[in-house]
Length: 85
Image 1 (cartoon, rainbow, N blue to C red):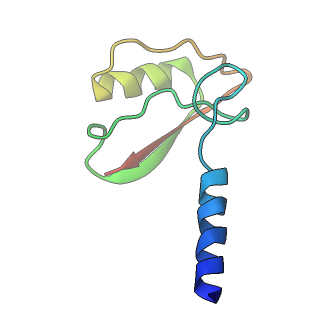
Image 2 (image 1 turned 90 degrees about the vertical axis):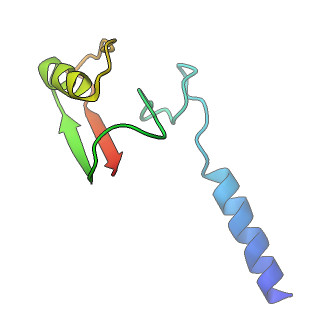
Image 3 (image 1 turned 90 degrees about the horizontal axis):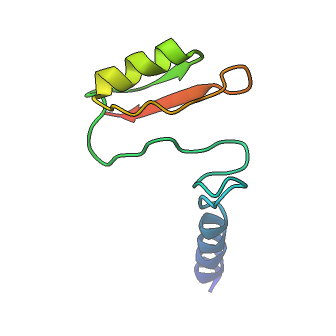
């Protein structure tokens, strides 16, 4: 019985932590938005990269073979690219 209670608690916790639509209607939370998410692609090794300029974002998109670079206001935002490898 105790295991069932703990399992139910964990299921509720996981469901509550899922991504929701932010104010802009995109997936994510109000503090961040997901620009691009793919199952396959990216880099061969896991890691992350912090991007603080448009030129850095353009370089990353070119490396990944993505053509449409989004317009980001880097005076208010940064980008963190996460690669699972």
